[in-house]
Length: 115
Length: 113
Image (cartoon, rainbow over all chains, first blue to last red):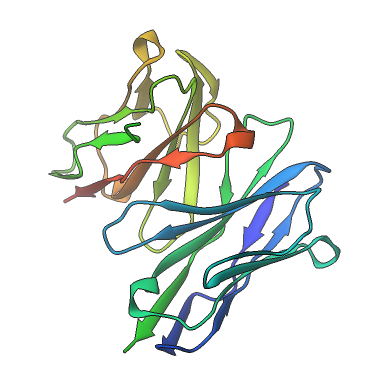
């Protein structure tokens, strides 16, 4: 069975702090995709990143970075120098090959960045 | 290109009433998905259309939920009769292919009172 676990329910930081959101996944597929989505207070789900299982290179996009480690089945997300606008719920998700392409989401981590 | 559009954005109905949610996917996206997030929990898959056909409806909670996608364009999700536990945010997503990722709509917040 596929599963995504985001153990951190809520995180609160002060602006300019770095923060890491953890994501651990379970799958028997050899080919799969991992995603991060952001849900700001306005409600929509905003796509942040997609990574396939064969690409373990870490990725950096501005203040955002992602660390994918197959050995520990983790796909962690770090925000450097956090800002108030980063306050949102962040979801990690998994999509396996051979299925219908549906996403399995984690429970979400609510990040609050205080000024 | 226009994104995924969902109507209405909010709906408040009484228990026992019927509600119909609509999703307009990105033009040309054959794959359309419905998801739901109930209060504080994870976002859960409901079903997947490929064009007008239901590819996977394993996540539909019960027979009070009916999804259609006539003509392979927009989709509707009807809840009849609505129960209190149906309250939550219903998301629609579409994709050309899973390797291209998924685009989500803004969701419909359903409140059953």
